[in-house]
Image (cartoon, rainbow, N blue to C red; front, side):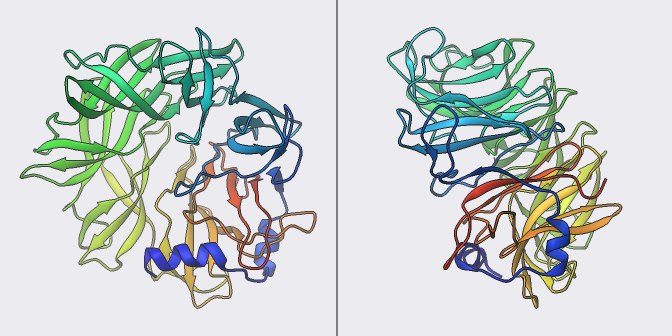
Length: 416
């Protein structure tokens, strides 16, 4: 199924719940529902920003960090942290910024990061201060800035950080993020880290790539507790045009690239913009293939070994075959992978799945009940799931053509 057709299906399709779907739903928890009261005042409105996926990371404690717009409140948008016991507001539009100014919005950067301690990292716009944008962390000590625009860009002569995005956070409090660096009239993309409080460049546009050519652009980075950073990137020049890369300190290597052989024959052609990384160093990604058994698949690479997770045309649990995969797979500590997919030959046409060496299960599908008479009407225009280290899944539901609940949900681990 083409990507545009999948998007249309995800936006409007509503199907009936199956027995297998009900079995997977036994431990669903509503994290936040549109129309419910929001901590700090007002009610939840939406959990998405147009043309961006909804990503709500979860940790082993079952905490979920998320973005939401708010109605009938002095703040129109905020970040929240939900646990099984309560939900708290992390930061809201209009709150004071440490060091001066106020937060003016999060809609440009609606994806937070969360670690096992419950720390939340986010990017935000600022007004009335000495800078216009920054990355912040809310932890047990309170709210603090990690990096602000306008400061110097280490590793780039005469460079100034002009914009930041896509923070990733490990359990030590280290960060990896995307940055735009201004050098005179030139602006270049880069991946940076803040480790033990020290800002350092990982790689920048124009730097030489390991397999030849130069880096031309980057997807959102991931960082694990061993401080390894992984990311997808585009490469220019007479070389591999793109791939998945990892950096340990100043050493950047290509894990796999366009033109590399796949486990099901043929070669990799294109990779998902966002990848997932766990502490074992495994990286999960979606890829488009050429001259292979299938045109698309989900893969994991670890220690230079690439394994197929699932490919188009393969049978899905409870019937049908996989016809398209979402572009952002999620990865747990033990190698379990979660992903959204469209199906052919099944009454359930779009669903979220989770697979590990113990087997594959369907987590949720369109039309499934998710408690209190609520049903999943859509998984969003660009479906995305998050996976805690032990396999807890978060997903977003939006209204379909006829009905459906708008909200965020957490499904406790089912394969462990």
